[in-house]
Image (cartoon, rainbow, N blue to C red; front, side, top):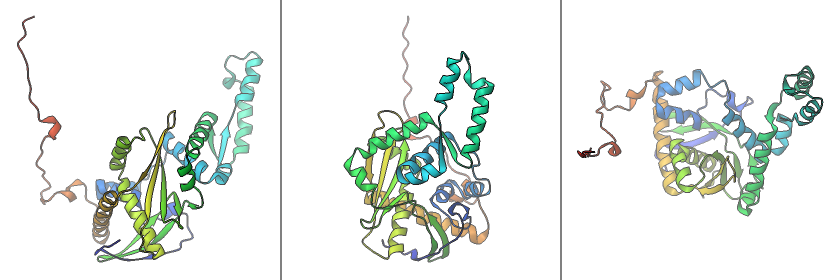
Length: 304
């Protein structure tokens, strides 16, 4: 890694929860900043409070595959098949509406405690997805012998001042200099995932994590970044992608530019919207049609 902007990195140990480190910017923060500094401030001031079904599934999937021991501690598989069949046998047409079912559900909730619940069908899907992954020898190799949820917190020294950064790679194999990131997706084909990677700025994530690990270890041999992208629908097909030099290079350029923008906003305590990307102070932008919209209109006077 060579950069005229980055001068060094000093790890900082913190005794707080990773997600509570508001003064540290992450890859997710940079993604929002790329839209505009105003969007970043909105993201920081009013973070998403309600976890979507897709987010909940992705979190459970990651935990089950990367940290199975924590899955049992943090999740409860809600399985009502037994009570449902009993009530059906007793002649109830809507078992889940009965007093008996509600009393059973209340007793289960007491057992659950602080654990997150996951439906039996979703749990079965996650198990099937893991079985599919682990049937492949290279997936097994990539996802073994390393450390999951590898937290990095520290101060990045730049030519424009210090910036607090945090990162949490899914899986790190230090002996191989590998970083592995699990992604669930609707399309794990080469073309489909390339589009998803561009849309979600995965190149920024790959470059930032790779460079941080290089600076953290002080080993200049560089790190390889792998994505394991798996579809959430049967047959749960997946692909293994290794980030190319072009992928990392673009990501590095973008995260450095975004860190410069972030430092400017921090120093001036100003968080402008889209006009920060406009060359003109007035903020007006010439509007052109995209290439695909520039086309002929052909018609014929067919007398029918």
